[in-house]
Amino acid sequence: NAGVTQTPKFQVLKTGQSMTLQCAQDMNHNSMYWYRQDPGMGLRLIYYSASEGTTDKGEVPNGYNVSRLNKREFSLRLESAAPSQTSVYFCASTLVGNTEAFFGQGTRLTVV
Amino acid sequence: GENVEQHPSTLSVQEGDSAVIKCTYSDSASNYFPWYKQELGKGPQLIIDIRSNVGEKKDQRIAVTLNKTAKHFSLHITETQPEDSAVYFCAARKLTNAGKSTFGDGTTLTVKP
Image 1 (cartoon, chains in turn cyan, orange):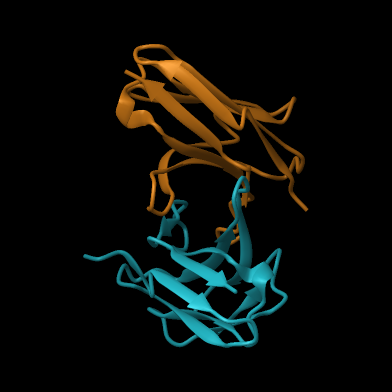
Image 2: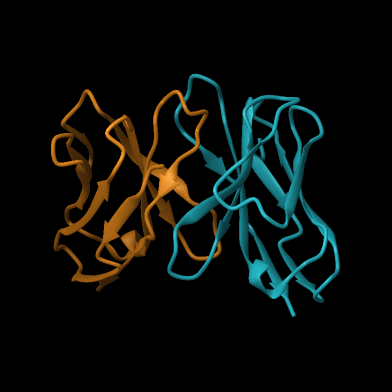
């Protein structure tokens, strides 16, 4: 049981490049989330998917898009990366009716 | 929306001492308050949580207290050990909000042997 798996773990992009961060969970969870974590700050919600087929904006959605590909997978796309998007990105999942959020190991993204 | 403030940002204690981290929240509708521990290079992991119908909850060396009137909650770690060294985050949300928590900025706890 791997839990929440994120790929890649590290990535360096040039300004303007695009990339997709992948997230998969094997716990049959309904809801999935993408957060970013910046130094000295808590996690800020980018987008979430309450259930398969739905996605909604969180606190800081600008510059990002998401796809809930199926119940297991929730991807985050940066269409044109900017230095302000340098951060550590965490994917998380929860089961409806449950309270605990399970987090992946994170993706450290640097945009130069 | 919800706003969560967490203090202190850094905390250093001697092994065996107690550590207390405090959080305040702004939305009186929030009714679920989890605490997460994040070790270096890893994702946050839930260590304890409390719902608004409870004033205190304990789990071995850790406890959380909630004061709904004052809108603040605290994490207490007793008999600290070096392996307690990590970043701790508080969070708040409504239980009906599909897991959308608002997080505090984190407290870096260092336990000196």
